[in-house]
Length: 454
Ligand SMILES: Cc1cc2nc3c(=O)[nH]c(=O)nc-3n(C[C@H](O)[C@H](O)[C@H](O)COP(=O)(O)OP(=O)(O)OC[C@H]3O[C@@H](n4cnc5c(N)ncnc54)[C@H](O)[C@@H]3O)c2cc1C
Image (cartoon, rainbow, N blue to C red; front, side):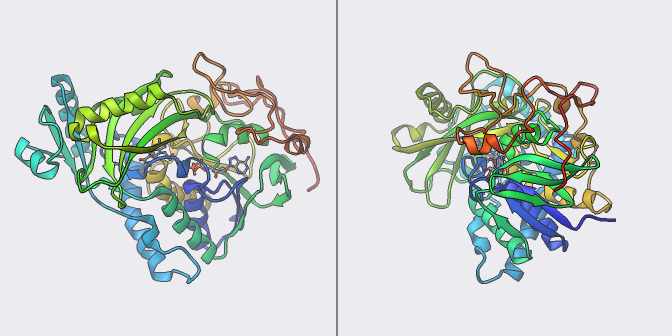
């Protein structure tokens, strides 16, 4: 029998997309968030939907599905938009295309090989000559050694897109409960039947962990840990400019930075304009727990790499900088599917730097698995019981075990952003402690949640 009551834990873009997909399919959906919608990473990153940075494999397949779905979903929302829902135009959908640029001979070799492999996998990747590059991006450095145009790269405004998806979910009967921090599990007969929140217990047939970089900590609270950790990233924002950058433009090194597991600071140039005229200069990657301090050395490294691509930006005022935490899994693949250790618990998380783009494809795959429909793609690579997800200990709040660059890492199990109040802690007696990580073979050693009557 299919589940009818689904509780989505987290109202970021992944939770919003899942809520919409399931509500449209006729399920009874409740979305819980400890804050408000899009208050996590979704409002702290960029909104690129990139096919260009994916090597052939499962993530590329998922992004190709997502890229196909994005315009379809936005069209469907527009057709049925309720008067109270955010207008689909808030998503700022822009199929602007991307240009990947190499600035060294080695970079050119790598980019040419990558583009050939992507083409063989069905991606449109068109080598550009110097004249074409100049016509497409007149302010781009002339010192490039290769460039490839990806017509299918696109962009949304991430928080706006999440609100559009969530608005449509609500229009299809979903319910949003803000200010509900999930602190524990209620099981019956070994099955998850409810979650305990700071505002009471919420029951359901299925619970979807969509808590982004906090999914690791949340999964520990629920007694079925998955190893999702925060990977910090920062962005600089210029004042609005006359048209200067026309596509998503990034350095070929970016693909290497995305795929790297290096815990130290990495920066690669990613430059794009927004609808308002500001140019976003990104981005950095580093493991720093949930330390959200902006660091001058990181910001200056981002600026320096961006200027190598666009020297003309040297005199442009930067009006602000911000950062967020990507939900990182060591094998760089999202986690989508049921948790075999705890029937009733599902995960839709771990999208790292691609969760905006991958959200709608993730939601489609989740629905297909949940309703026993034929999946659009092979779900096996995203399964929960794989070594990168179960193999490493996560601390109770999902941060890195303390390292030289680590920020505030707590092991109280009471929260992840410092908001873990005494109240939250006192209502979470079943939070497993650090060191109760899943066994590499997949047998969880975490103590199960207390068996209770809901
Ligand atoms: C600098 C930077 C640039 C990026 N650029 C891009 C890009 O160009 N393209 C792209 O696709 N992706 C990009 N990303 C990644 C993207 O932002 C994320 O993958 C995506 O936002 C993850 O969405 P989510 O819904 O999984 O998580 P989140 O948006 O973090 O949502 C999780 C939600 O769960 C809630 N929550 C957490 N714990 C609990 C709890 N215990 N109880 C209840 N609620 C809880 C939080 O309040 C939050 O609202 C970027 C990220 C960064 C940091």
